[in-house]
Structure formats: C-alpha cells, structure tokens
Image 1 (tube, helix red, strand yellow):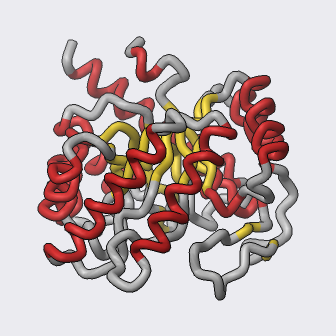
Image 2: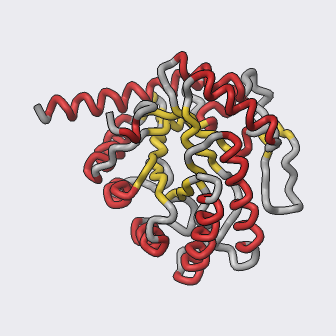
Length: 286
C-alpha cells in the first residue's frame, strides 16, 4: 500500500456527523461573533471524543475535524482528543478551519493571523494538515494575489508546528480551474489542495475536477442525493474525473443529506459506492 495510505483509503469529516454531534462552537476572527455553544442542528446524542472509536469499529482509520466541533481549544482538551485518536488507531488527517478570509482587503491581515493561530491547535491535536479557506471575494487578480501572499505566510507559520496547509476549491475566489491553478502555481507547493467533489456545479465541474485533482493531496468525496438516494450518475462522473486526473489519495466521506436518519448509513453507503467503483475499474483493466 502507498505510504500515504497506510491508514487506509477513507476518512470521515465531523461535518458528516453534525446531527449526531449536535452543538457547535463557531470560532471566528470577527470580534462581534461568538464561539459560545449553539445548537443549530439540535442537541445531538454523541460526543467528539467517542468518534475515533466509532470510526475504527467501522473499519475507517482517518478523521477530519471541523473547527466548530471543538468544544475547547485548550491544550488539555486537545490532548484528551489526541489520546482518543491514538487509542483507536485513527489518524487525524486534517483540522478544518471554518472561518476567515485571506482575500478580503478589509480583514485579510486580521483573519490570516487568526487562521495561522490554529496551527498550534492542530499540532496539539496531532493533525497532519490544516485546511484553510483561500477566500470569499471576487476572483480577480488583486484578491487572488492577496490570498496567495497571506496563504504563504500561514503556511510558513504552520510549518514550524509540523502542519501542512491545504486549501480547497471553495467559495467565490476559486470558482473554476483557472483561478485554482493560478493560486496553487503562485504558492509553489507551499500550500496543497484538498479537492472537493461537491463545491462546483455540474456539468462543468467534471472537466474542472479532472483538471485540478491531479494536484490534490486529499479529497472531500461529497455525494449528492435525490428522492431515490445517492445521485449515482453524478457521483460516478465525479469519481471518474478523479481517476482521469490520476488522483490516488484518500477519500473523505462527506455526507450532507436528510435522506438517512442515521448519518452513519449515508457515510457507509458512500464508502461502498467508491469501493465498488474502484473494483469495477480494476476488473476492466485486467
């Protein structure tokens, strides 16, 4: 097995379990916003500390944690969560920093310092990577350039903590391959790519994914759902785009649908779909 995949081919984001986990803590660089506990998805009936064990029991050994699912950023809490991960044999692939905008002319300096500060939290948790937002502003040269400068600074800071920074084809700054590739080229490998299968719209997204996934280190393998369940045609085309690009990294299972009452059912269905897709491709190459 490829060294990169020593912990297996699949990860789960805590976003896929947001109804199970319940409360969120919306950390933000904006002083007018509160990180106090709130329950937009209900009270939940799970605990983040239990998730590594639940993953391992289902044969999944990678986790991604959304920053808003951390009830505390204290070193003691982070080490407790790190111990739970280690005890279950689960790798913390990525800490997902869910706010901040390095492309905003008004707040880029403030937001970038705030994002960079998460590298220490990521290190305390034992994460390999930290996913950050490239920007939410219009995709013009000025905003892209501003984002590139700040992302490089964030990456330099995170590197001192042993954390690799990646960004994502997400929000207004990166609406297509042209802007995504421009930004990554400008960063010269200092920042990697988390390719997301669900952030761009079909039908253009398939060619777009086939273009950018050649550069991806990790992948948010989000599936769409319709009244019958998983949108198999869309998911297959998205996975085929990854295959065309030569992507061989792990897939983070992103379940974001009310179709299943138990989120684990949706997560495992997506895992089965991807496994079957790759088995079919292997057989067709025999």
